[in-house]
Every structure is written in C-alpha cells, then in structure tokens.
Length: 270
Image 1 (cartoon, rainbow, N blue to C red):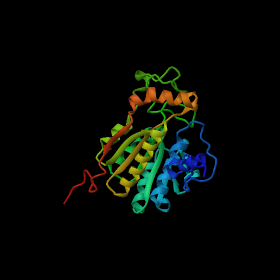
Image 2 (tube, rainbow, N blue to C red):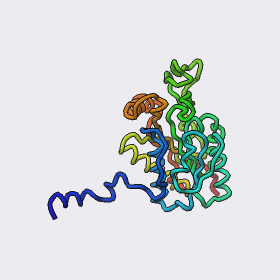
Image 3 (cartoon, rainbow, N blue to C red):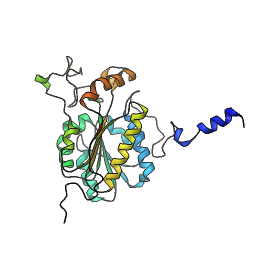
Image 4 (cartoon, helix red, strand yellow):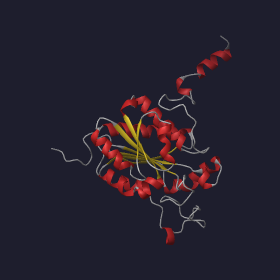
C-alpha cells in the first residue's frame, strides 16, 4: 500500500465522518433557509436519539412556526400542538405514557410569547420532559416581527427603528427565569455556529434526554440561533452578528445542573 493510500486509510475513520446521516433522519430535502440553525439542531436530535437507541420510545411535540415541520425530518412519533401549547401537550403525553421519552421543539415566538404560561408552569411542576428552545430573536416564519427575545435596538418588521425600551420593553431572558424554578433539573444555553459549538450542543441535548429518563424534573436546552432571512444578512454575517450582539445578552453555558442527584433536588425525602 502506498504512503498516500495509507494516509487516506488513517483519515477515513468513524470519528472523522462529518457528513454521515443518522438513520433517524428522513431522506427528504429540508425547507429551511440556507444558514438556518434549525437543520443543524434537527441533525443533532436525530443523532442523539439514534445513539441512545430510543427511536421507538421517543415522542416529539412541535407547535406553530418554523419548528412545525420537524416531523418531516426526524423519524419518530410526533404530536402537533396549537401555538405555544407544546409543553401542555407534552405533559399529557408523558403522564399517560410515562415510559416514553417526550420532548418539545419550539421557537422563541412560541415558547417565550404565546406559550409563556405553559412553559413556566410545566417546568415549575417538574414535568419529566425535554424542552428544546430555538432562540433567534425574531418571528422567522411570519414576516420577521419583534419577538420577546428581540434585542434592544434590533430592527424587525414591527420595530423598523429598533426595539425601544419605552415602547417595547426589554428582551425576555426566559431561560434565566426557567433556571430559577424548582422543577428544572437541567438548564443550558448553547449554539451551533461552529463545529466546536455543535459538539457542545449535541452533548447538552444528549444530557437533557438522559436526565429526562431519570424522572427528576424538566430539562431545558436553549439554542441561540440565527435567522439570516429575517435579519436580512448573509449566513456568515448572521453568525458574526449573533456572536457580537446575542451572546453578551444570552451567554453560552449551563445555568443549572441537578442531574447528578437522581432523587430530585427539590423533592421531599422520606
């Protein structure tokens, strides 16, 4: 074997395969805009489900918005939910089928706006579900309107001169609020803008699913994301803008981790 062939053989290893496709992902063309973070997160969720061997035991809940089409891409059982109601639907599914792994997949306009009540109360009850929250600071599907997480000064279709505190209030850091609730077992904020960030996000998603299976409370994973179409930027410029403007307000990292205590951090012992 030639030296070049030997080097190629050493490179072609499972850990170096970047474009391998999880069998949990359906073989269909994604509709998401080029540069959108949704497709990357879909791939990570599918990989985690496959690696954990829980494809037949997992149920996803997707509501309205860009997230609504998740059922087209990840080959598991799905339930639709009205706008903002995914946590309530997931609660019902998990309580009826406690042996299942149940997760919601929601955007900021859904989870942190019309669904704020369902989100907060599901976590406060410590429902044993995973909530995956895509935060791109805008309503991506419906025209680029201001969302609860829109930054101060950020231009949207409904804040053409930028978000103004006196008129629009402050951006909602809902993940920080979630972390304070007693029912939250694992709360983290990640991103998928670089290969390193993708690996960390996958690790966080897998940990959330593992903690959910221990029945010690809600796992909440925020993914700080881009919406280059809504932001009117190229994918590269969107990543740069996100790092410069969103990360200072929504810093990456774990906010709460009670998963090491399998008895539950706030449950009465005895």
